[in-house]
Length: 133
Ligand SMILES: [Zn+2]
Ligand SMILES: [Zn+2]
Image (cartoon, rainbow, N blue to C red):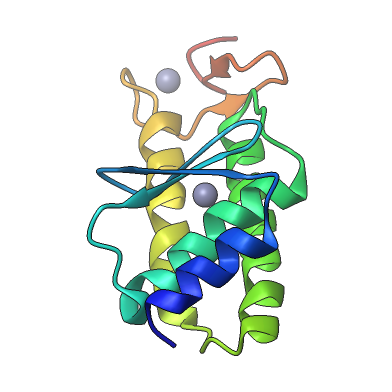
């Protein structure tokens, strides 16, 4: 597996637009940003994850919980792709990536007044069970 992996992925997904940038990102509906110094050994799974976003077809979220769900879905797609491309699945990397979203969810959920965990209604607004009643 080397630079030809990238060429193969690009050939396999002619509908996806691949561009280079600073970090791996998915831009709905069909653009995947690949880092300029793509290293197939460490970056293949990250690339497949962004393709996973394109394939899973869910991009919009209103709540942080939905956002986390979309990340999990994209990783599930990435794992299927990794199997078919014969790429090792690094569960630790996946957990680390998901943890950044979990941490983000925790930070955003914390009530600034009392420190309790707030909940988010489907409109995206956070509510504190103590302060907002
Ligand atoms: Zn993602
Ligand atoms: Zn509060």
